[in-house]
Length: 260
Image 1 (tube, helix red, strand yellow):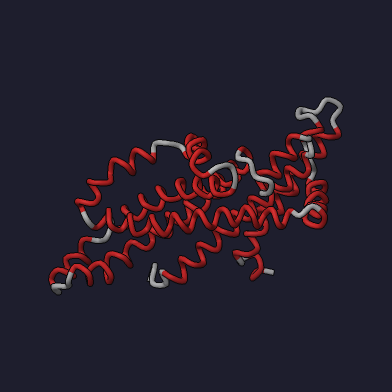
Image 2 (image 1 turned 180 degrees about the vertical axis):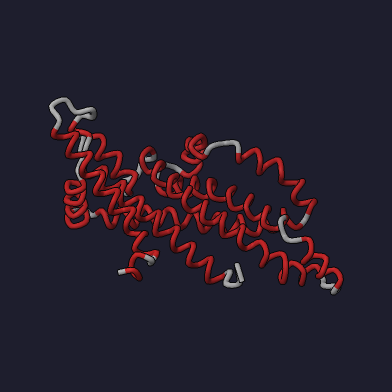
């Protein structure tokens, strides 16, 4: 028993279980009240949401819609990483490149992704390409900025040692700067993929697509299928949680020397 209480897996489960338990109590109290603080129509119990999820996955193809959302996210995120990491490394390493592009990065960072939905719709049309373009834009800037900071925060002592050993610029970059900046790069990737999930769900709600979790959420809300709406929201959160854990796993595998 003591070993179980000391396990991190035990406490990882305690939080969600306590949340569901508290949610059930509050929902039941609200729905049983003669004058509930929140209209009963808008409150679903965990049991109702669980039943809705069972029905959605079994009969209404929520699994396929989840894959559609995930596909849009992964494609947009992959494009942003393929562009953002090399660009951030170049801006962090080469001063002239940084000053040449600093204005554009800071300018675009000030424009919310939602504000340029109309532009992407005009360019890419209504559908998945627009959503992937918005996700790419949103993730790209996060990755670029974190990569720049990663390069610029390399310990000066390591750089001095490299100069003393007369390493070439290429060797200095490959052996010191890139490995040192990886923790910042992965932090940027984790933030970007979480933010990308927010953007893809929001985009699916308002850009004309037939399938996707965002589409499911807004459709359920429109026709007051509250249990289905909560169910799709829960699935969205679980996918985001899983992606974050996957990114952490990849980070530990790649930066295996971190903390040693």
